[in-house]
Amino acid sequence: MEHLAKRIKQYGIPRPPYLPQGSNVLIFRLPSETISAGGIIVPEEHQEPKPMGVLIGAGLAARDVMESSLIQLGDIVWFGRFAGWEKEIQRDPMGTGKSILQMKIADVLGSCDALERFDSYEIKTNDKSQHVFIPKTRKAA
Image (cartoon, rainbow, N blue to C red; front, side):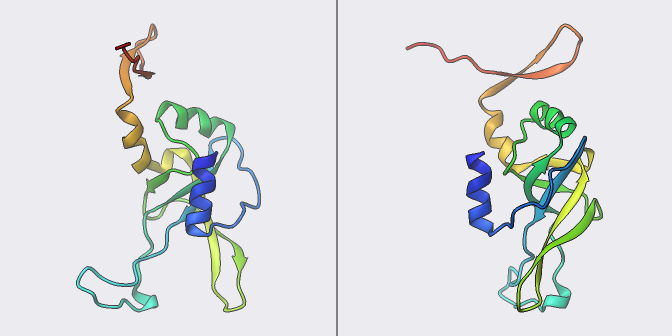
């Protein structure tokens, strides 16, 4: 959970209004780029929403899928461009709001942070012929 707390502080993510049920997850979409690679300032009406965000909540069925995919709460995840339903959860006096996406865990394509965890696991086949991640054992020096 400290991973999630670090991301909440880093991106100023508001508290989720509810805990999702079943295979649903809540994702805070990361802000769009305001300056292009060439240094040109992109007007707000031309900014594309990023297909990535911070995973901030998950139902119990979604947590089972996350565990088998090495995904944790607080990870930066990629999802389909039109996946999920957007819900505004906070509005400031300037009129801009912060919103979250609710979607199924199946719409999450992957996690950037799971790549870092992958090095400490190996893939094995269990007795049901399913592939599972097993933590690598460290050899004593």
